[in-house]
Image (tube, rainbow, N blue to C red; front, side):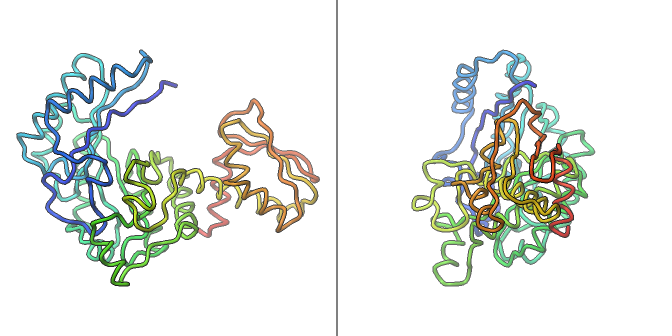
Length: 357
């Protein structure tokens, strides 16, 4: 499998018609100044020099959340720079993120001329009240319309959702995931809502009008979202914000369920829930050995050995894990009741029942 590289070009806030309650793009992106075609070219050249793998799949990504809302001339200048690298065979795809209410036939026809291949919509929620309370400025219908238009123009569709926005609940998050699935996206991102400095959320927090989800609460919700996406073969390309100098608790992040390895925590919890089911269902005692590809060992053990501690305290079972030459999506489980092999799809389908989804 070819290694994939993303060259990120941040275009923060430019053109965005709304100040969403959670947003401070300059903190989130780490980008303090506006993007120009000269800056973009330098970023791309610097990244390409650092990539030594000649077989790598490389894409240029315009992040910032409102790319198609910035001045058309600026869009075209940046896209023309990116297209040069595609034409030379140095880059394979051009990705961008934008708002659901900033998509139209004419916009998509223009983007196609520049070989745009992936458009991610910053949807955040498919609940009307959550959108209003978050000052998103778009409705559910604009999401559905834009998603269909993007697919009709033969451009890959990405959808982004946030967990824990004002008036959000577990049920609303799950319903958002189900509505995402109905739109058949090529990829999804899930972001826990963090209270970032100098945002509307920070003001609401200070006035006692907003309470962020706890880390435990957010993990408990996101694990269910992942199961829904995974069993529907939807690629979840990111879970949690990428750490930057600003995106850390005590720095740019005032409060909220932040963890630099959030996805690892969620997937570790999913494995724990499955093992818990296996132990109860089979009345296992004494010892539970989980053999796995080395890439899964830390998820099985849990953050700070949390899964080992859980099994010991709840069942007096010693959870052990050993790296084996197994496919990355397969576990071999050995216990007092015998040995069996299970793949991750089987685990996700069982979790669907365990989580009552």
